[in-house]
Length: 310
Image (cartoon, rainbow, N blue to C red):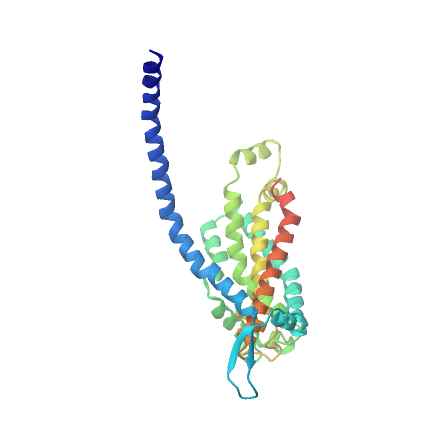
């Protein structure tokens, strides 16, 4: 009797569990449909190039005699020894760090001000200003650099009174002329990220602040800015990465001035080395630059995440 009862009670359980198993299997298939294509593309166009660059950075070229055929062999850390002995590479690192220490805070400060203005109920014509602030980002980097290069050039600029007296393409100011171009292009992009964060703040918080008698300026300072700190951290990380990857603007400006050398920025060092061609050394430069970018971004996150995400 007990055996019959046990079998009877086990049967419904088995019947109910089967649809659950089928559902889980169905979900796995749906997840695979979305994940597998991404995984393939991610591997082909991200992981594989990184792995190949690391592999090339450990190779070196050897010749049999003076005019013998060149062969690539495993060279260990030979390429990295040249990287760490390269004064030009480390000078370029210092140059872009100085660039970022000034340009990034200015750009993010402007982006924050623009976002706060767009979010303010006192501003009219928000659609126009949103488009106007973002429009420079729609201009390709090469076109923007060419345009500003003409504006800076004394013989071509419509502002000849200024450019004739201030050498904006000289060795003392060319770095900050590039910083102006980068700020003009990317301030609107970062503004949209911060503005999106402002749009996600519940309106009840603003209503409570207004009931307490807070002005719009006070709300912006005490409510909005603290709540968008995570967005500022995100844009800060993007800006650090972009600063160390600076290439387009200096490369274009080289056609306007002799103040920019072939080793002006780290990416120019990599580009110049690869055109020698010395792909193994260029790969080693790229690996070290990627590691420095990761370390700086990680340190920045560690220093800011406690305040941003508390």
